[in-house]
Image 1 (cartoon, rainbow, N blue to C red):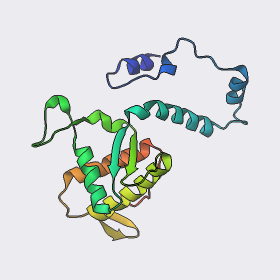
Image 2: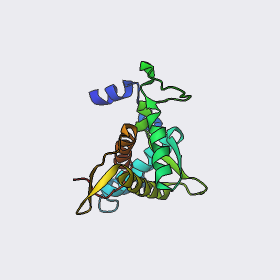
Image 3: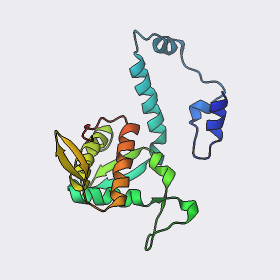
Length: 181
């Protein structure tokens, strides 16, 4: 309970309405269904809860529009994530018009490929696959045995963006190939 109270008071957290309700009511038949793990496995209940949380966070998602061309994709992702600076510290870059607070990187992504109407989890999974492939070919050198290592590319913002992509893949529960040694 102490952790819950700390979590509620944290400035970067926005508690979901369901969690703040003094009494959360569901029907007796639904409660019975959820209570029996033989009827409804824990993995499915976890996925339902995750989907509910995502749907409530969707309006606050970090928007990303990219092209499928690898170099353009790497540049677009890098530029978007490079704008995420510590706004309070005032480290605004020269000629930069919009800054995104760094904590926004912890929010889910909403991705759209340029010129395509697709949305949702399928597009997001495809984005992670295409983006990781693009970052691997741009920033890393193959070492054999289907693994990669850092290349001589001097793009610290791109390496940071690649790290954020890996973290977002974990956040979205998306499997990516294990290619790093």
